[in-house]
Length: 271
View 1 (spheres, rainbow, N blue to C red):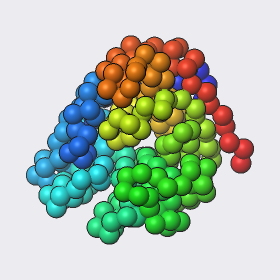
View 2: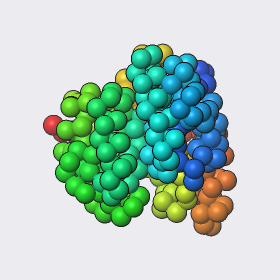
View 3: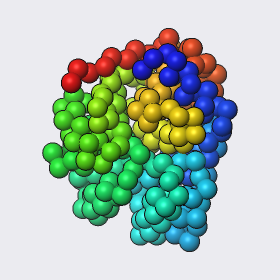
View 4: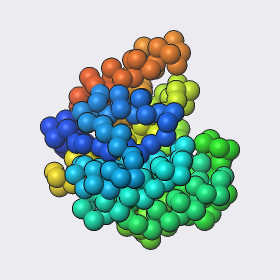
């Protein structure tokens, strides 16, 4: 990613205040909403089957997170996907713990065929979604990010989407491109919701990018850079996960595009 593209993506989010519909798990709803507000987006937790499809048609982007689904929420997610697809709204699939549990695996395997703009998960989830593994230990990955590169490329090419793999280094993959991103802090995995809220931020960036003419790859990469740069700053100011939480939200709000570019490093993967 060029500095210009990163700055354009950050600016697009903060100027357009994308409306992000979050169909997400009950554990992370509050932190997800706070993170979206901090980066400059507007959260909406609209997930009922009766309203989700209509709302997806007016949202800037839709997050589908399969973390704690009920039967009603499955119906809401299906309605939101249909509404987003019909309206051309970009949507993100976060296949939480896919491979480990039969019902959510079946749901995610169907959802991925319905046109997500991006898929965001850990290495075990991405491998399982591509049929290359059986998933991790619940929500925790049991394989490293590099091991999921081929699976990510397969998904990106088959479904014409961006695939983002989170880990010690993040990997952003699209049909013709793959980019390593180094950012973040060791406290991030110790705070509930960092990964799930990252999916929401990817959604915000994709919604803003669509209107600004920024590529989906650059949008997802910028979302990860924003989150990771804030994590690095917060970690340097914190004694542990509790103080990290507050410092991280503050950093998400305060960092400029120039700050974010300075605090992360990107490396393109050779074909």
